[in-house]
Image 1 (cartoon, rainbow, N blue to C red):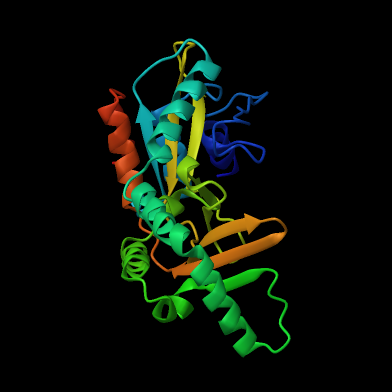
Image 2 (cartoon, rainbow, N blue to C red):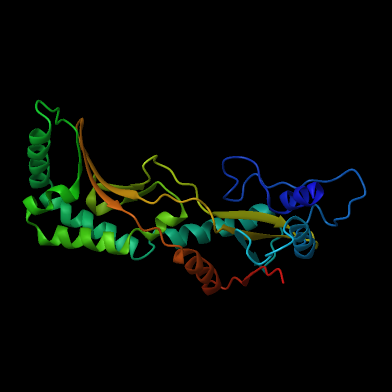
Length: 272
């Protein structure tokens, strides 16, 4: 079982903080006669054999899914660059997140002075002699005082539809040229959540390269996260928070289908 575990690491593992995005991939090469072939090249059948040694029952209920790509590249960096460009394109203007966040910021911008005034009043009412140089407040606490149906509608829409990209990792920064200093950050209470997706560049038996995508299905995710609208003027900072509580995994299937739509032949590895 130890050898099976090491073989799985050789097929799927990585080292380093950027390992989830295709860097730090490595292979192990035993100096003895092993029961496993192809330690230094992707071998789906040998990987299945190793997994079955470790998990004798419920082989189809693994806590991860592997998607293999049927396209070869002459160089590992070429494969990584291609995957990186596709992932950036998928994330960059992902809908409905892009329009929902931009819509909220656009609604807030002309009302920013009124919002800050109402926020200052609420902070003073809560804490006497409060330092209001920096405002950090729940936007929903002052929605009724603002009396702006557009902002209220945009907040309700984001809470209803969530920020789906958050499932792929946080923090996320949303910046829009037309909104200047006004931007939004999506983060957890601790600031970060690592992605449940792992990209790995693999060497093929042919000597060429390709990539696989590993989805950690049982990855621990926060129950709540926050979208924070931020504005900085001189040394004064304003933070308006909207609390969200719905991380949706549909985006993983959307990412796989996006690759297919770009002509990438990709399929899930089965263990039957």
